[in-house]
Amino acid sequence: MKKKWVSYLTATVLLFTSITVVQGSYMKAASSSPPPVPSELEAQATIWKREIARQEPFQSWKTAQTDISALGPGTHSWLVNLNLDGKIVGYMIIHARPEGGYQLGEYGLGDEPLYSYQSLYRSLVQLAIIPSVSSLESGQAGKVADHVAEQIYVDPLHAVWKVEPESQSGDSKVIYVDAKTAEQLPYTDQLPKARAKSVQTPLDTTKTENVIAISHAAYLPEFDAYDSFPWLTKAPLDVLQKSLAKQLDQNKRLIFTSEPWDSALRYVWAVNSYHLWNDNQLYVGVDQNGLRYIPFNSLVSHGSFYELS
Image 1 (cartoon, rainbow, N blue to C red):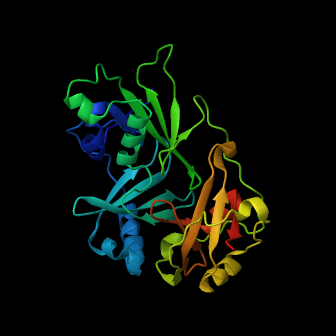
Image 2: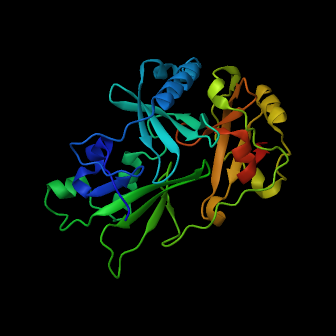
């Protein structure tokens, strides 16, 4: 039987809509405490937070508090939200390594991180899955069905909410929405498998828990990823990690495109930045409702880069 727990953050937005959020393998009542976070994980999250906060766009992280929660049921990953003055200012995804230690999966800046309860709430109201808080307060909503929202994180390009009624009936259905944009996917049963392209550059298995420094970073002016549509008229760039960083150092306007979940979605992201860590791991900064830093290998495994003319 699937166990559920409702985080205190969920209650601030989704209390009146009877949404239960699945996080980890524990059931948390409103008055109880979340499962304990390993002290080693807290320490590693703090190390990464402090290093990232040295970068100019991440200055707010210096005094932000970390809120760590298990990411999805039965996984060995965690979502770390950075909170400052009651607002989220960024996030990190951290994975446990089978051989021990932790890996920084991705991180980002802005008030709409992955798995934002606010974004989920707005999407479910627009999809008429749940009523708005205002309609509940005015007594116009009628009976509200309980729903369960489960976090599913396969990789940075395949991260979704799975939302389903808690009590199944003949007309009940499952929906999936993107974990960042809360856009609905066209599936009501099982998700297709996440398919990765074959790439020449293997994933680096260096133990990143000992890596604490960003050795080089670059930031480009913002631009519109839809200034032109090179993915329709040009071949993708044949880029390696080093050549991508070099092009960004030269202020080339690059975009990244991907069609995850068997082309159910299309991502078109402006590439505005990169962070090169001292283990030679390159995290590419893409604009998706705020800067989102994703490992280079994850991007080239699931999409392509193009240069805007």
